[in-house]
Amino acid sequence: MSSINGETPAVVMVQSMARAGWGELGGNEWQGVRSTLTAIVARTRGRRGYMDATVWQVSQSAGLSTRWTARCLRILEGLGIITWNRGLLRDGTPTAGFIQVNKPVLLRFVREAWSKGAAAWQARRAETRARLADLKKREQHNRRSRRVELSTPLNNNLARRAFGAGGAPNIEPSTEPPAWATGKEEEPMNEEDNYLLCDHGHVKNRCPHCRRIQDSRKDEQARKPWTKERRKAWRNATARRVQQDLERLTAEEHRRTSELWRQEHPGVSSFDWLKQQCEKDRAARS
Image (cartoon, rainbow, N blue to C red; front, side, top):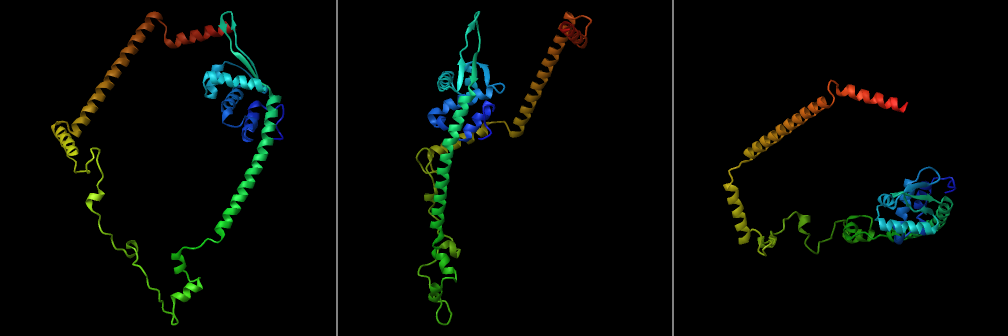
């Protein structure tokens, strides 16, 4: 930010203001103004930040409608960021308008954006530090699950309850372990429960309407004499015929072009004619 001054290009100023959070131009209601300003500085020439452009050309670069772009240009003009001289008609010919970026005003907006963005960054850092501290505090004494407590020898109370005086384990499961732990397969569910309803409201694979549709498709497929190999051969033959037609048309077009050239330029090849034209242009320029 300290290296930005009045000699900095306008596009660099806008990029700096975007990194700072746009300042006064931040928020959803200024989205069109930001897009229009970005499009203007992208189309400017030189360090002075000026250009000749119509509203339609700026709208194409901003990705907005022509009417909305004109409104945003008027807002930028009212803020003093740009100077906009509208286009006019000269001898019945329309001329483009003239837009210049007022870099001193834009520099003031950039500095205000950095001042406002610095406070936002400090608030964000404080909020992040508080959130991380609270997260660390909550995760500091995270209680282990019952399965881990029973399997670890670090808990002395559980170890004393699990082993008697002789050291033999005396824990008896109060409930039967689940099927996935013992390797036993669960009882198969009823087949009717696995079925889903079809589009006609019946159980899948048991709907008379679906069966009738499948039977009609099978009959239609059976009546077709075409096989996969025959369809492939037909497609290849059609492709070869189309390619031959294209080659024939290309040859005829080339022949007609050559005959027309010989009629318009008798006794002169295309290379000699092009060489003569280049010599004429060189002589006219000199």
